[in-house]
Image (cartoon, rainbow, N blue to C red; front, side, top):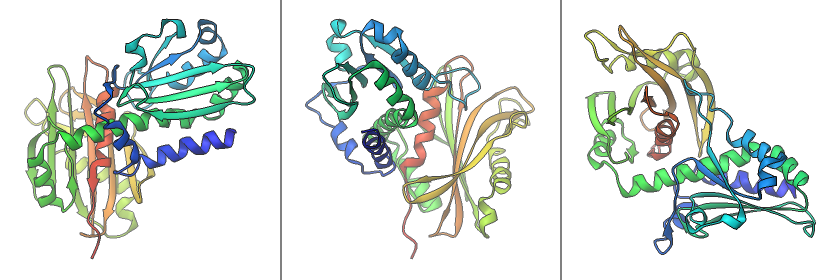
Length: 334
């Protein structure tokens, strides 16, 4: 049973790497009530003793783990608990639900992932187990898949929203400049553009997010090496001006960025994740960049998302710019 649950969740996560996953179609069911709750909120429906015991502790450790890539202490998810006897329509309609059912009549632990049970868009993870101890051990063994399940559901929602509400002009400019199609969510404005660089920004009253797209020649595997990716980020980030004369964006040297290769769909990307600063001024925040070889042009294409939010939490803003890489469609090489 453990193998089945693990395989199921991994399959669901893998499906999210594909732009046209079935989950998006299910999430678009207009006949359902609109789901409640904010992004990255998860509501757990279980008894009070279960929440105050080992089961609740385990869920808190997994879902409230600190996000390691933010320069402030924020959990991966905001977690709430409601007892079954206090289950209201609003709670039932929550966008991310975990339903716990412990009954000695069950022979083994089971898990059922369902979409749009009471509202849309919604994902519900129904957990059944004969004992609390069995379920606790079960979740501990599959913690990464549990996190990825809810991360995927939030990413699907962002992608679905962008497909319905997007900045067509910016998308057209990206295609003209780089030869790739990209869905740019509503609200971004084109701040700067050149032959191999574009900067888009989205301004809030107390925060800002944005992303850069740039390209450079691919001359071999070293073009996607850690050193080259970092060097290119320094070069192109300097195109983003700071608030004072002579200031510009750079990569923080206090906390060196982390580099790794990741697979998204059928494409390999070099991920660089860290913190940005402003040279000759005092600003900063988290960033993540993804670089890959565009076989059609023979160049490396990079999308680099950043967040500036000195007063507000950064987690949700950061997740939104992370999702942008899933909205790029490359043409096939001739």
